[in-house]
Image (cartoon, rainbow, N blue to C red; front, top):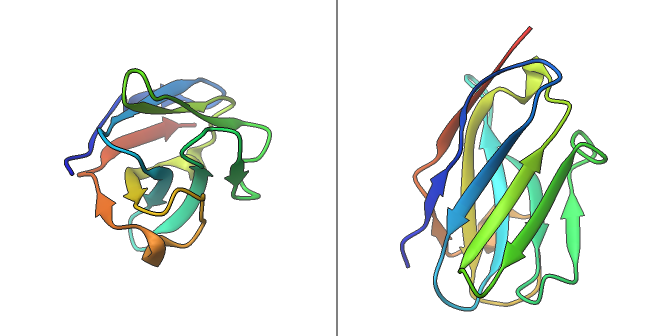
Length: 119
């Protein structure tokens, strides 16, 4: 499975970005991020059906994960961005169809896309 994440960039604090991840097949999906000098952390996850989602406390109310299975694409809409959201964002896919916040549950990882939020 090849995962292709896109949509990262440079944005001012308070701005928005939408990340996309193309993934063919039946998978639950997740977004994780890794800031310089920090460990990779969970951001959001969505079940295969799209009816179940979960978020890290740090992004609740600001980020929304969604998917369009007809287009084999998962999205992460990021609003009210903060400088602390700066990181490389990775999408990941897991064979079991239920969502999970645990990185070790994921079978496939994309290459990452850089998100930089300036203050």
